[in-house]
Every structure is written in structure tokens, then in C-alpha cells.
Length: 173
Image (cartoon, rainbow, N blue to C red; front, top):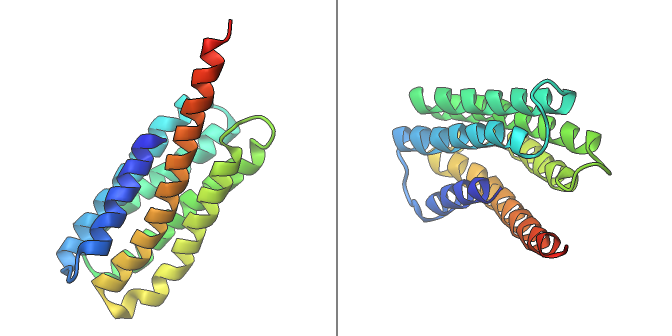
């Protein structure tokens, strides 16, 4: 979770401080963010206690694969239309997968609320992106970066909280 938070916060910081990104820069920055987030999400499915054969594990893996694929497409075809449409699809599918996995895991996983919140953030970003296609790379990166910052803070708090709670549990006999 902390790695995912770090990737999101670095991307968010890049979008905040990059005054005039080119289309190629937008494609590479956004594409690498989506690709890295998708790969990290695939990696964390088994780390969160799900097997890839389980329903929630398959759903999260599919959402993560869609996000990684969207990242590759956005990086290789840098244009505002591709970024706005394909990134929205990737974020939407991954957000819906996290939301669904969070609802399935309620009461069984400490990550359920975080997946629900992250899913809503991803879906919100996906819905907003197409409306900014005509405004160019800076606006598209701003919307994607805003969602990344919000989800990065969420996952940072989640990771640090779980790490703190685990430390107390492991110290007890």
C-alpha cells in the first residue's frame, strides 16, 4: 500500500509542478502512472490475502490489468483524446473492481473501506477526465493528478495505520 501511495503521490506532485506539459510528456507521465499502479495492484492482490482464483481476487486482477493496459496505451499513443478516453476507461474499470471488492470484503478485510474509497475516487476521476479533453495536456494531467493525490493520501494513511496496528499485534504473546 505504501508503494502504491508513493507512486500516486509522485505522479500528483509532477502534475502540480509541471507548468506546460507536452502531449508526449502527458502520455509518458500518465501512462507510467497508470501502468505502475496497475502492476502494483496486481502484486497486492495476493498480499492482501486473496488468491487469484477467488472471486474478489479475479475482479481486482482484472481491474488492475485493465489499468496497466490503459497505461501502456496512453504512453504509446500520446494525445489528449487517447488520454482522456483510455485513461478514463482504465481508471473506471479499476475503480469499479476496487469498489466491488471492497463491498465483497466488508467485515472480512481491513482493506474493505480503503478499496471502497479508492474505487469511488477512481470512478470519479474516470467520469471527469473526458470533460477536459478539449483543454489539453495540462488540464488532463491536473484531473488525473488530483485523483492520484487523493488516493495517494488515502493509501498512505491506510498503509501507515496497518503497519502501526500490526506492530502492536506482533508484540503481544
